[in-house]
Picture 1: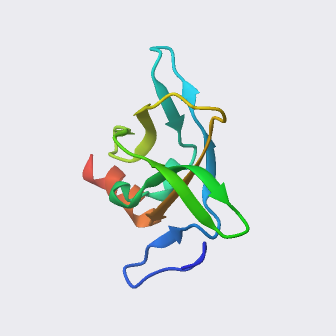
Picture 2: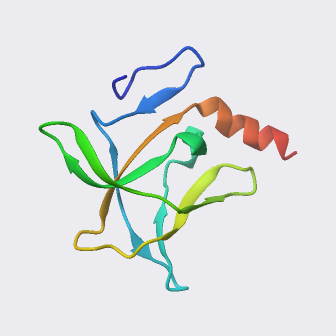
Length: 112
């Protein structure tokens, strides 16, 4: 699927053809994290993958990061990812995932 392609369940995929670029930052507690500014997307956490390297010529993502912890807001929407390893060299990482704005609104409705 390309970046704007949807699947039968209404999800839109951010894939290796155009992964989202983010930066690992150190928060006040000394932990490394990624803040997501797209919380209204409704990211399906089980589809989230984080990579350290991306080759745009071959669209290959390598060096996947695992063992991170997702953080949710009061409406159960993904807002950040923490407990990441310290950056080695570049703090740039690449994210792939599926999202559906309906998940965002469902999270709000379900917390009322």
